[in-house]
Amino acid sequence: MSGLNPSALTLTQRRQLLRHLGWGGLGLAAGMLLAHQSDASTIPAAKRVISIGGALTEIVYALQSQQSLVGVDTTSNFPEETRQLASVGYARSLSLEGILALAPNLILASEDAGPATVIQQLKATGIQFEIIAAHHRYEGLIERITRVAHLLGKVNEGEQLIKKIASEWQQVRSNISKAQQASKSAPKLMFVLAHAPNQIMIAGKDTSAHAMMDYVGARNCFDTVYGYKPLTPEALLAAQPDIILTTDQGLKANGGLDALLQRPGFAQTPAGRNKHVISMEAMTLLGFGPRLPQALRELHQAIAAFKVST
Ligand code: HEM
Image (cartoon, rainbow, N blue to C red; front, top):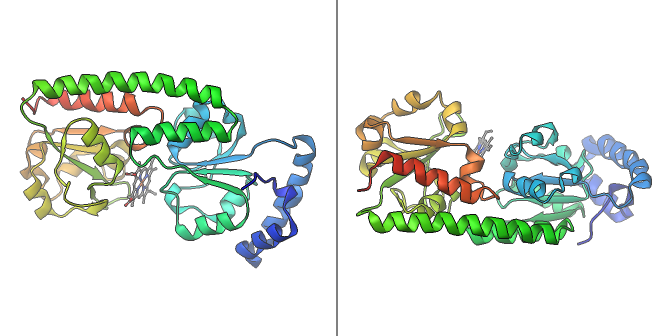
């Protein structure tokens, strides 16, 4: 699908756009189309990129293509300058109007972008829309960088970035492997996702949290379930984690560490009794972006500091 400046929409594409916006969005769409006619005459080939997903935004910055960004979602919190960009809201609850108002001609989205209806509507507008998944794997990150670099015309920069990350990754994986050989057993971890108040979920398989626990050589207490699932006190008592892993955002949304540990069942686990809790910034820990090796190293060091696997 070719890239598209809103001023260059075909009649059919304009009709599609207006149909998807409905009559309420008519004024907005018309204003947007008119406003960008002048833009097009001054910078005809300019990319207007919206990046939905912190990892993708980090890649755009790492490739020195940030001047193309016209908007990002709220998981795009690194580097700090992203805060100056227009926000299209949370990646999982996007709104069509918020995105179209920024008149993008390229939308980069991670696999968790949603809701599905908005994604379908966006695809129907004819704006170049690229879902770039990492599938919770290091190899997925490499594919992500390759794809974004290609889309932004930064192939050489992409190759350099991959080289750097590959060397960092090799180093941290080798350290973890040495530590594993020296220890008798893997610590039991439980990941708590609590980004909305009073919504405590644990991570099963097929989540980025599970992938990080796996990469760091820990056991996920909840490796018999898939995806994020609500946590019950009974399941917590049965799981008996040595360490609780969570995010800074989750602790903040739920009143801090002590408030989390006062919830039913937490005090009856080794992790709760010993206050063995590791909290990391959500996108650093779970983003599968360019800081993946750094995140794994930090996680490994934090686990080692508790000395629970001997
Ligand atoms: C409005 C507040 C938020 C709510 C209600 C919320 C809700 C959720 C839910 C329900 C999931 C699980 C999705 C699934 O089942 O696959 C999730 C995952 C996640 N959220 Fe949020 N979230 C919020 C804010 C944030 C923010 C601000 C960030 C980052 C800065 C963030 C980062 C993440 C990450 C990294 C995951 C894990 C994704 C994975 O494993 O692939 N969330 N969130």
